[in-house]
Length: 220
Image 1 (cartoon, rainbow, N blue to C red):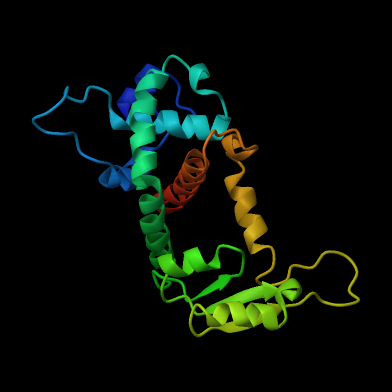
Image 2: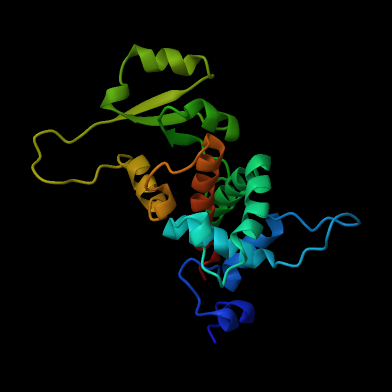
């Protein structure tokens, strides 16, 4: 038996790469809603099986109706997916896990610097201590300075390429956004915009991030 997976997963089928290990499940489980008491039918589907199904859908990119039969029925998984999407649960989990990952790396929970993009205002709301931004030469100029003034006091650092240097050279702070997108796009669900709503598309993005950060936190 794989010691990283629960007996439930190991006896049901061979563990998949998208399944949560015991260490990963210990990270995620505390954030999931407890069963309702005193109303409705009692919960009969293990939440770990639901999470494994959602992670499988994210990583494989398969359609809901093509979810393999050794997972819970896709309608059962949807019964959890849509309320969690609408409540913003995945965004909340992702926010906390990112702070835990920073602390585990010996950094402050809330970042004080970030790489500029069009979502800066939303990120600033999530991380109020953000004060310094890195940007490439395309953001140089008065327009960015004026936009940042509306959000508070900021310092800007333009990261420039090394001129007249042949070949590829890794430049500090460049390609951070592209690198993160590449990590997330290992989940085939994000390969194309398949979703019927922005809410679902954002939920799958948060799920991919939660999956990534959970595995980092669970490493020995």
